[in-house]
Image (cartoon, one colour):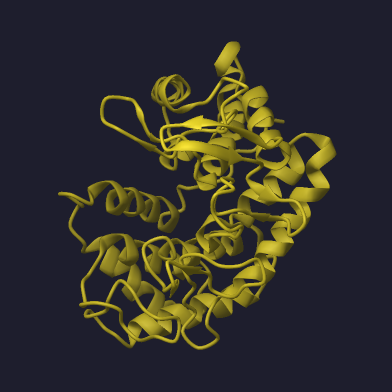
Length: 320
């Protein structure tokens, strides 16, 4: 879903979209995941979990609007604009539905919390309500406030401002590190009795605020955040861990995960120290192509970071 945002060939985009609609999409009104996608699949095309991860819907929505602007909308599932509008409406407004899933009875609602104007970690009500900092994509919300269904455009404009404030609240004031999950007030969430550390999901947060700055220049605090996180990792040189407490103590043994190298490079899109930012981009350039067990996550952010750092991840606006 992530890389579909910037695919260059319509045929490849259509094939990926068709596969996702065929195997991952919930089209039955009685399903808790109705109008959303299963977040995790088995290799035989069946769902491992019927509930969605809202960042998936966020990226598909953006990809569909970009596809409509680049290639024009067709018919059926290839009416990109209509599909994007429908998905965006469901993310904000979908009703609560209870029903059977592969994990038993579950109840899902909308993917955004209307009160807080924030994306939820999951719309599945078996978990305490909260958010994932790395799901906040104000750069996209700005476009939805321009291109989405008119009734909800003020909501998306407010959501963009809310997420920018949230980045400032949820990150450590010294290290710039964000937790994997958080409460809507910006405090780290607890899961299984443990306070969420800076870990796999949270790596992406710096990329999100940096892309927002590079597209919109709307909140100079995002520059400060990038400076903080790059200064923190620069102090570790090439021996930094992949998990930390928010105040900077390593959790587990040091390792060099390529996805974190990639998002640290993306932080340079908002950073104010060019020499330091260049070192992080060079670290990405010198990283091997991801392979092995974690090649999906590492590889996706490896590609994404190269697109962003080269200026190829761009806004595809409607043709005039």
